Length: 240
Image 1: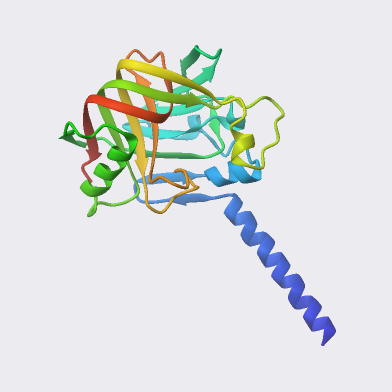
Image 2 (image 1 turned 30 degrees about the vertical axis):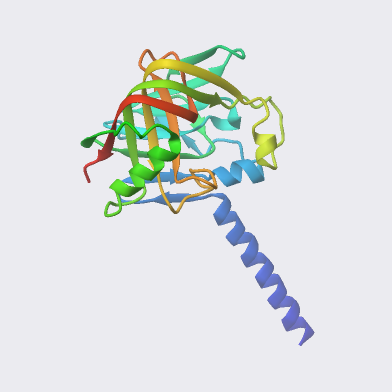
């Protein structure tokens, strides 16, 4: 009897370990969107290494994607088939490089070639407003999905991850050490976003249904969007 109990306990432990391992290596593929890795694994488990290399994504036509660079040393954006990585150079300067030879600890990407254009009402100003509008406009659409905004912002705040080499991470506070924020004013920009109500802690933060990266029209500034005041922009939602 004791032997059976011990065997049963060992079986449960092994199963739990295997299940935990599967959760750690989170990968999810929909018909038209791919999710690799998970934000929570980076923040709470310290899994900072490469889960995906962007140069392994084969279909570049209409490709969009966002995530951080491996080891949280920069921010990644794919905008209509072109990959960008931004890195901190000082408290007020950054570099933005066009390159696919980079990797991410978590990443979400998709291909969109046809968009529906929507004029934004004058009262759509903030990230919260964007999230509410996207949700309201897509109640009958397939989810999750990518979307974008193009136009002028009055001001915005973006950040770039810049984790010091060798830093161990076991909490969001530790993950954000070295993060540098940049303030933008009166800029023409493109904002690439991903929406989901089911992926908090995977590719959106625990308190949001959207994850947004911004790039300026001149491609000199790019990062994770924290705050925005919209002046005049259009919203683009996938047609399918």
